[in-house]
Image (tube, rainbow, N blue to C red; front, side):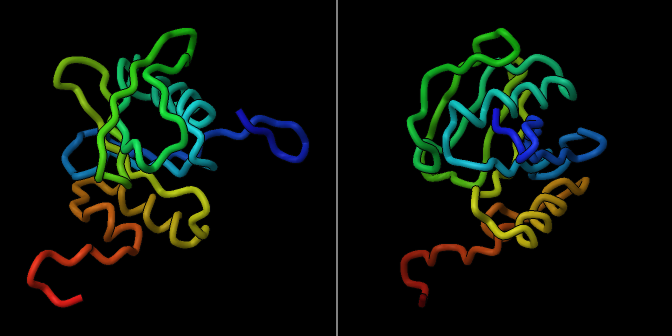
Length: 147
């Protein structure tokens, strides 16, 4: 875990949809400080567990992170990591069978204004905007569409 200039631990930058109703596309947003999974993920898991209970598995885009391990330790427990390609901007949190939460991931280095706006929008009940839109990215053109 990182620390501020006075040595106090830095809490994960996490914002959850207040009802946790899972009625929108995202259940909240996370803004990690780096792309180092081994450093960032245990703190996220610890913070989430305080709100949603024990986390069994995390799914993330392997291309968005440095050195993705198969497991991490958090709260004295081993949490499995599944990875997939091509879905940057999200992280999937699993508590149990068919019990998933989806968080928007704001890339490290994003300016404060963009990050705050994206996190707030992803944490609104009934949110339905895709990650690329929330993060201010233009969707990639599909075949036959002009750039």
